[in-house]
Structure formats: structure tokens, C-alpha cells
Length: 423
Image (cartoon, rainbow, N blue to C red; front, side, top):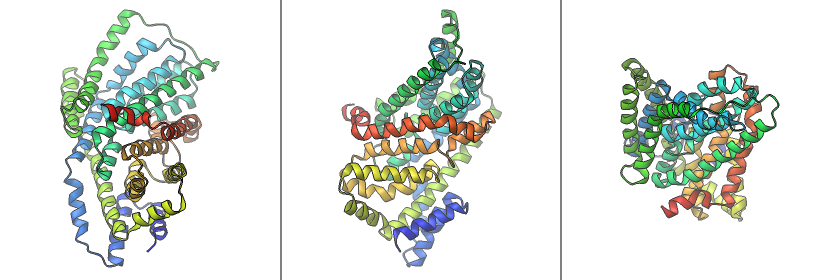
């Protein structure tokens, strides 16, 4: 059975709204039955999904981010950043981007970042004359930093699928993450300068800065503990996630921001998301197992290698394919479906797997803010009650910035690879 028929069947299942996990797993089993191949691999793949130490980082990071979300620490973080730079041209926009970047270094989740900072930033920026569509676009794009700036759940899953060092992937995410933060800040300042409705705010006093910074120190402490423990070699990503969760509990309970009812809600939300992720991964494992037996990855690799000899054109073709698929698949599904298919061709071409992981994640970021299934669009809609069309109007410049960053990453690979090669 050709790769095109299998891809058509998968797209058909997704179009008729079969849940992604069951579309992947069901099609995988059907392929094994059709040509009869051993079904013993199905339960082995299902068990193997759960039997992974690296995947422990996913529920731990989700627990940490949901605890911080319930405790509303984003308000303190935004207030501290705003007190220092809010008086700059476009200061609140800059504060929003920096807050998203810092919170990303704690949560590892795009959704948590957009929701946490969005609830605080939207009313503040609206009062200062920022157009609604710009606010929504900035927050939707800023939220995507949650899956690029380490720790990152998609990078963890990519590392597991490709058997690539997760710690090195995290190190590689720093350069592109800081670059996007810088470009978003520059765009926000330029936009505010030419926006006639923009209203600046007064410079905060030193006492106000001290008070606001004091409230944000616990969040910075959590981020430092999580990231520092990984980069210093003290803990694995899974262990650092557990450490971050414990510290977030201690901090939020000691601040009086957390109680047992809120903790129960955070655990319940995290459990639902974890189960969803693990079921999708299980379905993807079965699908990957079946297409490997059908030699689909080898077929796709041969097709790409035999028809595209230039490596730059090869990467460009992959980028276009991923952009197209991103219009229809959410980020995790995109990662789990495409990496097993494309990875053999990547290795055959001698392309650095760590670099490709960051290239892939930037394209996933773009998919998060492009309709019709851009998850961050719906998150911003949920917290703002805005129309999707208004959010899309504000987000497209940031989508272009991300695409240009992906192009830059190809021509300047050290943007991602310099830190993991030297540290």
C-alpha cells in the first residue's frame, strides 16, 4: 500500500473528526491486519508508551504550570516586569513578551503561557490604547515561546522519538527563543511608536519596583531551579520537572495562593492533559510501527532524496509540507506523525538532528497561531471573548516573523547549535 493512500486515509479520518489518537492507532492496527503482520507489537507499543522515564517530565511540568496558573503568579511576574520597563515606548508590549518568555522557562507549555499572561496583559494593554487585534496577536505569538524556550514538552517528545539528547535540545532552544523574544520586543516598540492611540505610562518609583520585584522573586526562583538543575548536570529533565513542581507547591502554599481545593483542580487538569498526550503518543507509536513495517519512511526518504538533490531545497520542501500539515493538525499530532516519517531522510542527508528539532518546533509554533486549528488562537479567544478573525488579523505579522526565523535558522545554524556545542 503506497504512502499516498495511507496519508489519504489518515487525512480522511481527521476530516470526519475522528479523535487523533484513535485515527492514528486505528489506522495502524488496520494496516497490520490488512497485510497480515504480527499484532504482538501493538500491546508492546502501548506498554512502551508508558514505560519511559523521559516522559515523566510531561506530567510534572504540566502539574507545575497548572499550580502556578491556579496561584495566578503571572500577575506578579507581569507587574514586576512592567514596573521596570512599562514607561518605555511600547513598554506594556515589551513587558508582555518578557513575561511570556520568563513564564515559558517555568511551564514548558504554550497554552499555560498564553492563558496566564493573557488574563493580566489584555486589560492593562487595552487601557493604554493598544488596538485589540495587536494585543491578541502579541499574546498568541508570545504564548508559543512556551514550546521553544526550555523546558519544552514538544522538545521532550521529539527527543524521545528521535533518540536525541533532551538536555542538548533544551540548550539549543535558548538561542532561537531569545532571538524571537528580541524581535517581538522590537516589533512591539516600533508598532507603539507609530500608533496614534498609544498612551505611555509614568515611570514607576523605586519603592514600587522593589515591591513588585519582591513578589515576582518566587517565580524567578522556580525558573532558575528548573533550568539551572538541568544545565549544571545536577538533574535530568524529568527530575528537574519534579523539583520544579515541589518548589512551586512550597512557594504557592507559603504565599497563601494555594489551597487543597485549588491543588486538586490543578492535579485534575494536569491528569486530563497528560492522559490526552499519552493516548495520542500511544496511537502514534502503533501508527509508526505499522508504517515502518510497510517501509513507508524508507519510501518517503527515497522519494525526497531521489527527487531533491539540493539540501536547501530539501529542507524548504519539508518546511512547506510541515506548514501545510500545520493548517489541519495540532502541534503534538504534527510532531508524532511527521518525525518518524521524515527522520530517516534527515539522517540520510547528514542533517543535524538537534538543529532539525528546533527547526521543526519553530514551524510548530507557527501552526499554533494559524487557522483553522491554531490552539493559541482559541486560548486567546476563550480569555478575551474576541472574534477569531480579529485575533488572526493581529497574529499574522508574528507568524511571518516566525517563518523568517525558521529561514534564518537554516542559513545560520549556530543560532541553535552554538550553545549545545560549547557548553
